[in-house]
Amino acid sequence: MSISSAPESDAPTAMARTFSDLTVRRAVESELAWTPDVTAPAIGVAVDGGVVTLTGDVGTLHERIAVVEATQRVAGVRTVADELRLPAPGGDPHGRTLAAAVDGILAWTAGVPRTRIHADVEGHRVVLTGEVEWDSERVAAKRAVERLHGVHEVESRIELSRRPQADDVAEQIRNALVRNAILDAARITVTVDGDEITLTGSVGSWTEHQQALRTAWSSPHVRQVHDRLRVEPPEI
Image (cartoon, rainbow, N blue to C red; front, side, top):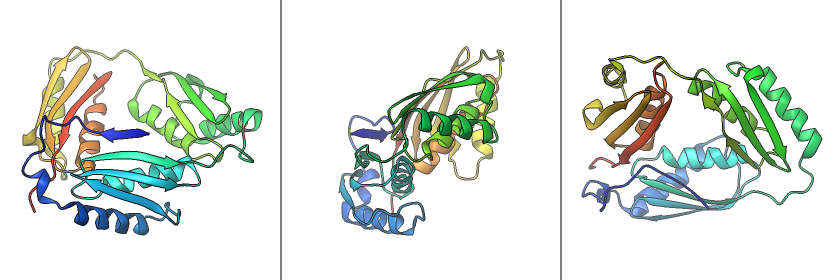
């Protein structure tokens, strides 16, 4: 089981309890039915205090990710526990065939510096290593590989090259958060330690959570982002 969660406070807040579990479950089921990349006929959705547990079978890793991301888009979701199952290894591509496909997708995907990324294929598991300039480049590489048939797991060990120092990194990131239409920047605190950034505070949804992280990673002076944000759905 894998769990996608922002760090939580010691106890659920009053705001988080305003969404009933039944309301969240129905909304998640509707969002899954609305999502084109989700074709699995029967995905189980259970909700307990904003924690959503997903069960059932999916056809590919790409679909599994689509299910989790669709769930995270729903208002009232605080945490997602992914217990979805991929098909047992069988006729899916593997070994040399899968390795060639991985090499090809990395070479032909825009935004991926192919010469700086190395892929090791172990059965249906792919490990990416190397060093790139931007977090968006390693995200693009991982995303591309995740879409391949036969890939059941992708581990990214790609590192960022050393970043130039700047005295106003925190201010730059705060300004970027303020500019973003979907974020309430007043609820987010940015602290800097060299080329490492820590985000603390709260956001109202997983969409805001992911946007805040992307905003921090966009700085040319950031090599590591520590996520300490809490997902606290607003009162309805």
